[in-house]
Image (cartoon, rainbow, N blue to C red):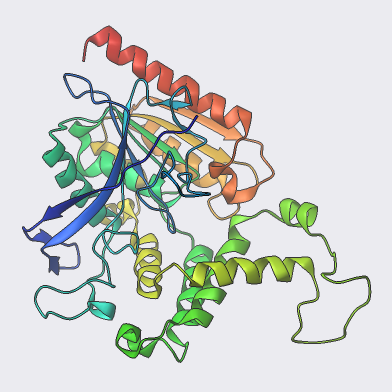
Length: 379
């Protein structure tokens, strides 16, 4: 049985300095919590979300169909991250379009919608904002920070920005930075959006339009990279959409995979904000903790104090297993305690959201050990 989820909002009037040198004030963060915070506030687990996800990590909304949180298979009573033992917090990041302050909102300095003027935010900025929310909740140290993909980058950054404020980092299907190929995919997706005639330089809100064509293409590009070749062939192969005869058309939908991608693109364009897509993909591009250390990842990780679990998936070519192994090596070079699981799964990058029993088992075992550790130490 799923939890009943209740979104909450926290307002921050004070200025948040950003890495770019800009700042933001009078912003809000939307978040959800699951489970109970124990008496000494030691059992909190922060979950960081990926590109198109949100604070709605687990549970369902009353009277709403298909409202399960994006990691509801992982988090809840008796699940791998057991909310009978942990107090789980999901936070929607700044710049998002799911409730936290973002480009669709009013800039308090101008009284108009931010649009393209919303400041560029980075993974490090998100972590700083999350830390402020935890301060408000009275949580000094987290039992763990957990994230997949871009969320895994945030979990990494937590260990470097606030090493003393967390005991464990769980990094799933992530990387220490993006490869050139990944940046290239992001750039093609961004160009699809900004060259849409309805984009209007990012100020499309004033024109009462949405750059839906660009968003559709961006989503189609992204979705291709989340799946493996094996899964695409298994699900769609070369099946035609209608019958067995070719139409010999350059514009009609012929193959099932085309129909699927167009459906995903159409759906995405109805709920995701174009400026948010630009912001989040750029935050992905910028993340590179080794950059300040001449590219030496081991030096970057010298600050980390947490224990680590890293998980990768064999067919994930967007965040390939060798990228996780780079992090593992950097941590071992610093004498950190690291567990690593490489799951042989056919699903590509999306595997981190799915129900592979080996994956769920690794997560369950690790979080059970965290719970036992907290009990034994009386933390």
